Length: 357
Image (tube, rainbow, N blue to C red; front, side, top):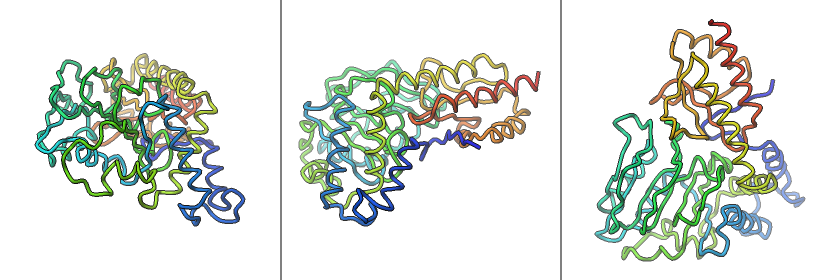
């Protein structure tokens, strides 16, 4: 039976990425050696890293605009620390928008470096919406936001205009929709949603914002060091970088971000239409802030839970259970999830309605 993977991450990737990366583990570039055993300084892998970094900037429309792309280790959680280390001045301050668990984690780390202002928060309402009315202090060293909130199913539909550097955690929706990415000065994203397997983190930086903190930064946490060493300051996570390159190639061949956005819009519309029209279900996020990556919803009558759970599992659906802090269900519809899989879920929801009524 075909599986329909709604896992929030690590998550579904294109089938061709699995096939090509599996072959590379056995025999990389017809070298007779595994990707897992070749030197990261070898000609073959240096070419992988160079192409991956270049393809990131190409897909985001940032070529020749003063940006560098890095593939680092430590997950997006390490970037919570690296961002203030590299951008917050000694005795400086930063501004943050609190829209969920990961945003609050970033705020916690920033407080180790200086004054950290939370300009707005949706925490009192269990993060079920994106705050809109807030002001950003122009004397802050940067403003940080999280574009998509996997746990709570909310997504920023627009971004504030500001004269200070704009930093965005795009871990769960990068490469999923067309944006003017040049409005951001620093973007970071864990690979394991739309780009590759867990183990590497993409960081895209406008170089001109670096080197202004007045602090000494340990080499491993210094973006400038990683740029100078072309993302190879230390041994990179070879396999996750290669699998990310394959996913970026898949996306380019599909037609790039504009092409995948159309598919993502279709998937989200199909599922949200069912959530809104089916009397057994309701969404948990404010409609104007609904995420096209992570749809969160609940059964209005929990007495149907056992039956519904049995039905979607029998249909080959996996990873639909919601996060414990929200409950209910979470359908993660990342780039590689086909429209067909969303239709399977919608069919199950409709069948439940037919059985109950």
